[in-house]
Length: 167
Image (cartoon, rainbow, N blue to C red; front, side):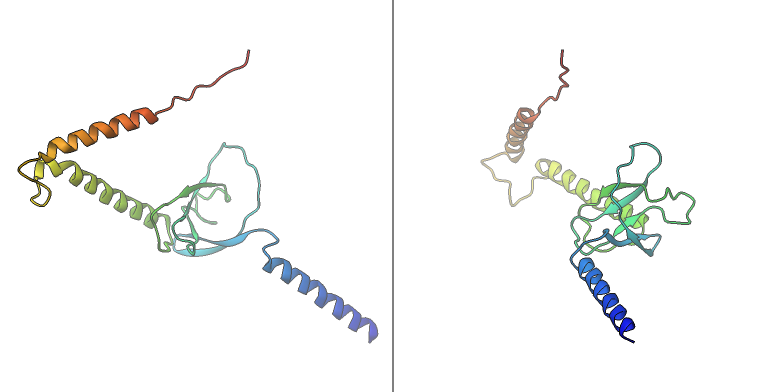
C-alpha cells in the first residue's frame, strides 16, 4: 500500500509540473489553422527547410489578434504539401475567416475600394467640388504643385542597392 501511495504522489507531481510548464508557454507552439471551413489543431515545430519545392499558402492576420491562420490546403486534399508553409500576412482583415477563397475575396474587395478612392482623389481637380473650389485659387493648379512636391520627395528617397564584392 505504501509503494502505491508514493507512486501516486510522484505521478501527481510530474503531471503538475508538466501542466505548469505548458501554462507558462513551454513546449512546442500550438494553435488552430482553418482550411476549407474546418478547424485543424496544429503543433509548430521550428525547422529550417530549403526554399525549394512546393509550399502551401498560410494566411495570417496581423490586424486581428484573436484570428487563427487560414490555409489553402489541408491534410487529405490533393494539393497538400505536408505543412510546408509560405506565410502571407493579410493586413486589414479584422474578422475570422475560415477558408482561403474568403481571404482572397476580402483582399480583392479592399483593393478595389482603395483603387476607387485613389481614382476619386485623382479626379477631384476635374470634378471641381463646390466646398473646396474657390474663385481665387485653381484647385487643379494647387494639386499639380502638391503632386510635383510629392514626386520630388519620392525621388529623393529612392536608394539604389548594389552588391559589393570583395577583391
